[in-house]
Length: 186
Image (tube, rainbow, N blue to C red; front, top):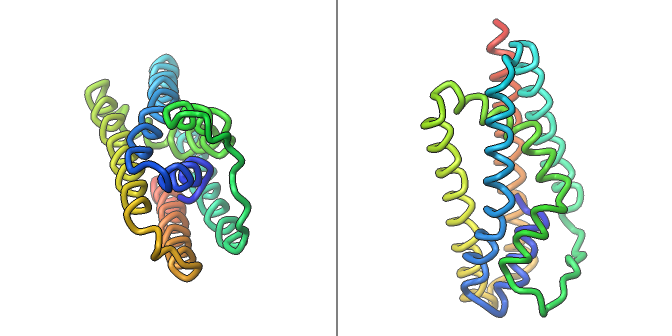
């Protein structure tokens, strides 16, 4: 989803094809402890079914809302102000840690995913966490490399197409989470 971390990845990719690798590492420095915290907190408490459904509905609604907001702001070209002297790992840590959307995502959608992984114990959670971060790693690495190599092709039309695709995927997943929560009630 286009957001601060993706924006900083694109910005830094203009000067370094490896910026995505380093930003993903910084992102993981924040994300892994948060995932572990959620898992162990959930392990301490028996989460009532109604709360699990509510988290799915709220998380899905939040994803739909974020997708709609991204669509509404698709013409906004404000750049994230970042000092060029900061390295990419720090940019990944900082941008992740101060992103309210990231925290809200983990408190809603991410918690739902952890709840599902928790059904398979710590091994299931570990697989989920590893795959989740691996996808982030591949995404930011490939995105940075492609931006670095294809800068001359990034027109407004291409950017808009990518944004609209991301919006559709995000809204689709949000609706899926919401429908899954409702379906579990039936």
